[in-house]
Length: 305
Image (cartoon, rainbow, N blue to C red; front, side, top):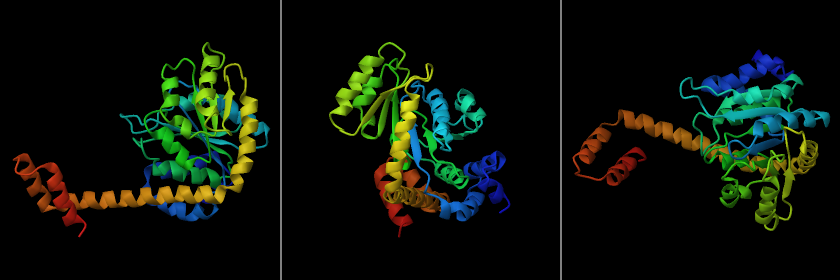
């Protein structure tokens, strides 16, 4: 595959092409995965998540520059909500990260394609592309909506949960369970009013439950706390590298389940399209002769004989 030598040299054009293949061309994506899979699973993945408006993109911009100062080679995948018009990622994140791009950090916005509740295959495979190109760590910024925050923790070795003192539902989010997934918790935009109260609330909810929980204040605008965050991440990276084999096993287990379920879903969808009995049962449901659950049970038994 002609793409591989340039990908190995981390040439931006090759990386962009490979990730586009992962997003848009399933057949070519499988061929590429066969070539690069054996060297995957070694980079540390840092998931940065939290409510919309928590300032994740600006934070990552500053953080990437600090990680480079620590002799690391970060890359960023910004998992964007899919544009309903174009089907592509909304590129606001890349606009907010221009500084780190200028200093050599590779940043890519990738469409979530409605993958709330499940990490899209393209995200997992894009991580492998960036690993093959030699990036470590790889930072994933989540959509900041729905169930995706929890899903990010399934593929991240380190999860950073961000909060914004001016986001009204931050305290509710703390109570709602997002606090169960973090390795580091950040009160970002700590230059704003309410940051101290939010920091104390986090200590109350998290500090007592998790002795090893790290809670920090950061401000991308004032460039405060970013150096401390980068140092803590580098320290955690060393720890997580030792446990990488176990965490990779859990990640692959989740991925295999997703792929199998997706395969089964596609097979069933094809069978429904070809099934004469489906139309027959649909008519019975429409005529109120049978309820949808009974019809589905009977059809399912026919499909999985």
